[in-house]
Length: 423
Ligand SMILES: [Zn+2]
Image 1 (tube, rainbow, N blue to C red):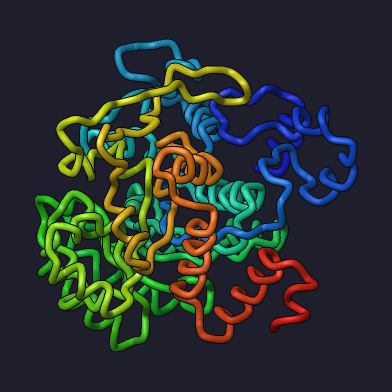
Image 2 (cartoon, rainbow, N blue to C red; image 1 turned 180 degrees about the horizontal axis):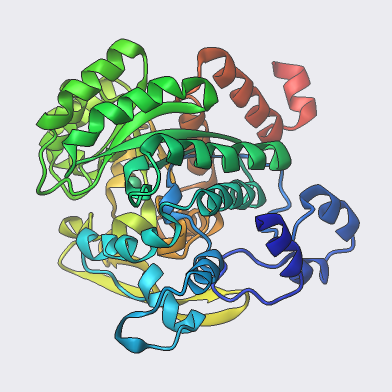
């Protein structure tokens, strides 16, 4: 179904889609045949060889706007208040339009659009397949995408059937687009009763690409304790573990994730700069921090670190050359210094990387995030490259697979002649 749709839409303008149509690029490209052959689909962002590693990206935060809109129309899903169902009217319900005030406000989008795909195996397969395509065209070589299966059952599918449908789409995409995509199944803070089943599914579908588990949801109001038995079991089974912590919660929340849930990676973790003992715990154990720049600003996760003399700067987001109503925080910058917890991590060479978190809800791409890091945070290109290799050595792949990934990255980052001489 998605294949046919893609072909039909080949030449249409795609408002609300983050990726630039390939026809726009080909107009400026003498070597178009090569690129067309290489990507063999309608969008492309990057000419460089795939060289990114994405460890923190929610599948349900990555659905194409146009796909959600099309499915909503097919299913007769109406907008609230009797609004006309146009893409323009639809967008504010599925993505951030301007400065978001809190994580809770950010999370409000999900209950609107999740039912559009929930309980529908074909839709789940389609969005998973498209996810792989979108990763491929952004130059991502390896991705671990995460989701909670229970959120997509809609009393029509079992959590296991959700995993099967998503795996089907991912595997079709992996075959077609040559991106290595694995999955992390999320527990949800508010629903500890699901956690043991999440571990069971991670165990059962390990050979089908499930590499770990996570805890997502409301960190501020729901403690981690009820999830600890499930995480202990995951550790015994050799299932990898990451935990959203220190995003809107405290440094203590990161300590609990590491000490009680045996987390090998932390989603976000910005709050560790508040407590030197937790900061050193992370550093000492080489815990990987999955940082997400725009997300951390839009959800206000880092608001408490804003200096009093800071300046807010916003700019409109541009899609396919057209300025949208969406405003992105360009960055909030102190007149005295550039700041963000990430600066501490970079200065101290902590094991951290940059990810998109929920790119379609935030209306961002990897390219946007890298530009943001370079121009607004003043991270150096070398630091960004280090982030990619930090991510590569912190994946939930087995040792052999990880070595292969790092070798592939090296061949993309380091010129052939240099490798011959030194490696
Ligand atoms: Zn996240």
